[in-house]
Image 1 (cartoon, rainbow, N blue to C red):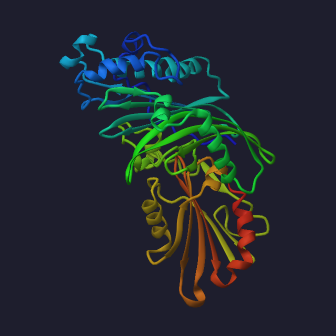
Image 2: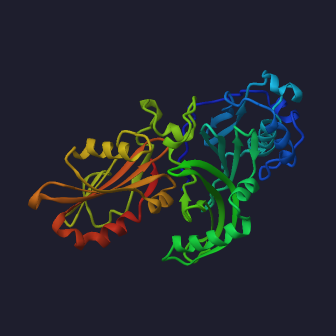
Image 3: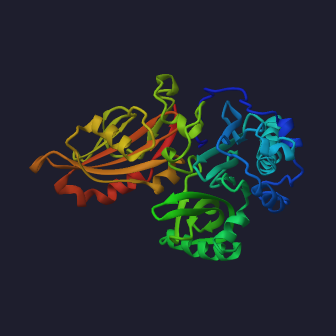
Length: 419
């Protein structure tokens, strides 16, 4: 099934500077995996000058939604009139090197694809910006679709604004006193532990990017990994993972939205990770897709919406009002449907269902009612580009154990169907 894509609500390219300037400003390497051949040398000379990056910011180079194609490419914009840049002819060499890498890398790939794009395929270039006092960071993913079990390629563009330094992956690894082989070996073991009940063999681990964020006791670096693996039941797959060495923690990243939208910059016009929280009713096409599951043997109470198993267990499919990707927003949405007096047991991101449906999903478990009317409810709450979807399961508390396996089997068949 083809993944649901964002509707073409925005069109055209939003350019904050000319591409010609980007391509001619420096002569660094034109690869996406290397910051620049001359970065180390220019960092020393440029950092010694009192270059002011207080007005440097992440801006949009290209933002297009043509049919199923998504083109989100960002770059750094800066004040080129400051006196400290006169010795560089008004250019900041480190920023120009970063922008040149983007222009000669993912932007070129995107433009080349769009020139030859066919009607049966599409490309998704998604970008995620992070701004702090210390760093300006862009993470970008590139995926040509349709694909099966492949997330595509990942890149990061990281700028140390105080030291005026375009940082490469190797710079980040050096700061962590790590090398690529050590990270690959450690991550491979953690990935095996991440899938304890499956026969996963890790073929390769590539440190494709990184992200520095503020932790409770200081900056934490998360290494962004591209992993190739094979699994007996699934076959070959490629996915994105985040590995934080300081915590020895590894997580799977959802290719449709790598990070929590609330942690990222809020761009205007909104990028794809923001559009899911849009409140404009025109942003949602009701009925364009239906959340389906195995209803065999159930009584159909309301066609396509409500079902009853053994006159005991209720299953309801509905489309709540679209909310932002956040625990409190999802809980508020459920309370608006089930009442404020629900007793929450757990509300957690559901990686299993996110992988199954290719969109961020939550598993919400709670109780309603009192005494003999007590029911345990289990909701799979899915947040897609065009709307939110929920499968609500309600079981009398005294019969939960009897139906746990059956409910699990039904939830494992969740899928999106075009209508």
